[in-house]
Amino acid sequence: MRVTQTTRFPYQQGSTLRIAGSGTFDLHLRVPHWADAGFSVRVNGRAPHGAAAPGSYLTVSRAWRDGDTVEILMPFTPRTEPALDDHDVQCLMYGPVHLVARHEQREFLRFGLFPSASLSGDLVKALTPVPGRPLHFLLDGVGIAPFFEGTTHAYHAYFRREEPRIVFAGL
Image (cartoon, rainbow, N blue to C red; front, side):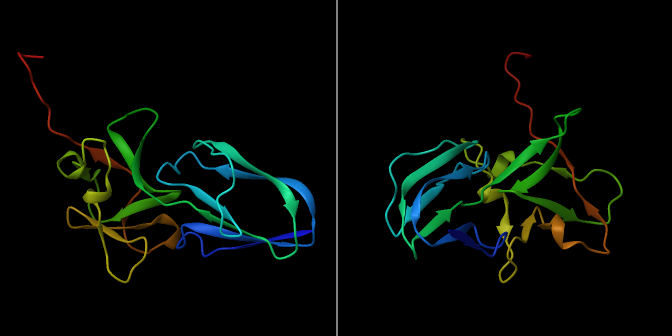
C-alpha cells in the first residue's frame, strides 16, 4: 500500500491523499487546533461517518481500494496569539501561517482590531486581501505577508494590540 499526498500548502487550504494498493486499515487524520471553520473530509466524494473537533483526530476505517482518494479541506481563518509574558503583545496567524507586518518603525506597531471584528471575534474583516498575492493582506494600511517568504525589509513578527477601553461607573 502506498498513500501519496498532493497539496500546494500553504497556498492551498487542503490536501488530497491517493491510495495505491488495497487493504483494510485506519487512516488517522489530524484536525489542527486552528481548523475551526469547516474542516471536512471526503472519501471518493462522500463524507465519512464521524466528526472530529479541532485538536483531535478523525479516523477513517475502511477497506481501501486502489485509486481511492481522500480530500481534506482546512479553511484558514485569521487569529491572534498572545505572547506568553504580555497578552497585549500578539502575533497574527492565518491558519498555520505566521503573518508579519512589513514596516520600518522601530517600536511595536500598534493595531486595534476591535472596530472591524465581529462580535464573535472573527478578524476576517480586519484584513484586506491584496489581489493577486496569496497570503498577503493590508491591516490599517500596513502590508502583512507570510513570515516564510523572508525579506530584506524591516518587519514585525509581533504587534501591540490596543483596543478601546469601555468604562461603566468608573470600572
